[in-house]
Image 1 (cartoon, rainbow, N blue to C red):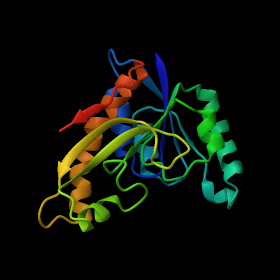
Image 2: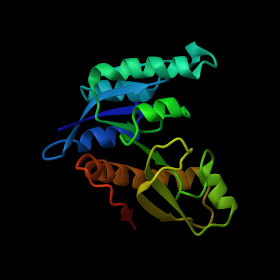
Image 3: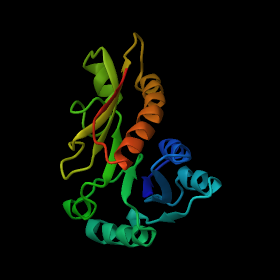
Image 4: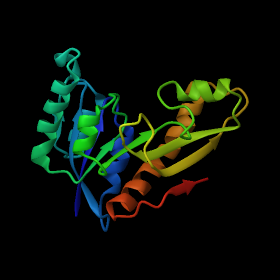
Length: 196
């Protein structure tokens, strides 16, 4: 049985879907939810699910990214995760941290990578006149939003869409895609999943 640590910065809706999916014959179980934001709403949601939580406030480290990441590793290590799932974790990780968990870390990004790496993905897709948007689950590498793609889900961009309306439709697909990819990844299968 694989152990999964889930990293969040906000409300944790993807974290909840991941945690809820890891039951029955699923090859993994959640072992920790950790946040870099002490007041992140997802921490209370994790506690309500009976999951251990930890907080490492990046602001306490100023610009010392190595110090923050060392503290983050120290918070994660006692839980012995096999997989790290980034679920709205809004920190760019250094090669040192990525290397520590190489081949064991997943992230979900709200665009059809390789398009629109980084932030403001929905606004950028609408402004470009794209016909569709979506989300991608990928392995984390040292390249920002650039690791091997493990799954994608697509949604149409509708006339009159705003970044907010598009984000809401994409989030529905995130909640379906990420648990499906995690289950496959935990079973040792890196074959990409494509949802319509």
